[in-house]
Length: 345
Image (cartoon, rainbow, N blue to C red; front, side, top):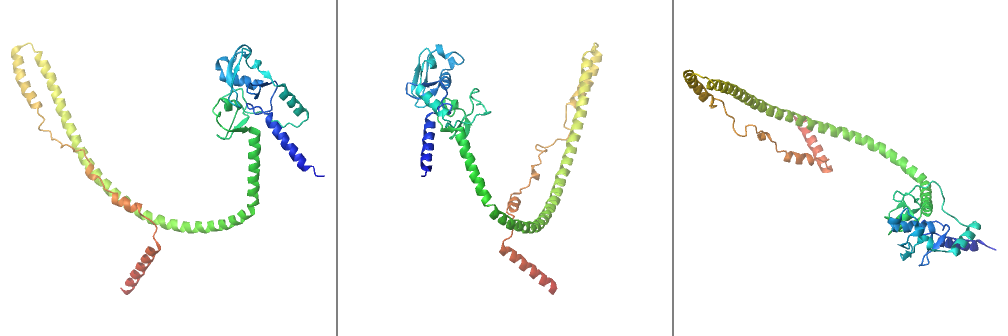
């Protein structure tokens, strides 16, 4: 007699039953005591208390036995109104507790593996025990109820772990199965790489020689043009520095006249003052004139006339490309014609 179909049906039935015994908050099998909400959905009392405190921040850290409040059922969003006893006033679901006891005594439960689970950053007292399928990140059950993942689709962390581990194992097996074919292709490609490297090296050397020739032409032209700018720069700088020197000498003389004039005004003798004042006025009049100092034109410092229009050259350089087959044949024909002409000469 073949018992395999019966075993499969029994296993499927147990999995279905186990799903009914999972708390929608912690996504683990209900832990006593189990409370039943007015909407007939069940929660672990601890989970119900967590949901209540999250929905009523004022009562966090206070005893829920002496405070009323309200929260919504995480399964159907039905509003649950609590009396002064809080979650401790909710009726226990003894039937579910008895089923869990029988389930565990028979040794057929498959709880999630416990261990050093990381804690949720948003809810420090909650372990990361679920996986957000929408955001593709592990999170905690409180994030599903009140946090950033309340509108997302979630699954037990262990189930996602086993599924992805299985998928990864299938992928590894597929890769291993194709290794022989890949190795053969790799050997062929490695030989092709050697030929590519050799041919590329030859063409790179030729291309570098051609560009080095262009660089030399550009460097020589750049050097000549910079020398032209430098020459005019030195001429203008010499002229301006000479003007600065003349103006400073003029300023120094004017300052001395100012000092002499101030001292003369302090002269008590009228006759002496008049004699000295006349000479000082003549000197001041001469010193106030700067017409003897050369002037520089407006825009003297401008060097814009040395600007260069390289648009055409830039366009030509940007359009440098490898020769086509037709162009290569034309060049070879020209070289042959030049060779024949040299022979005839």
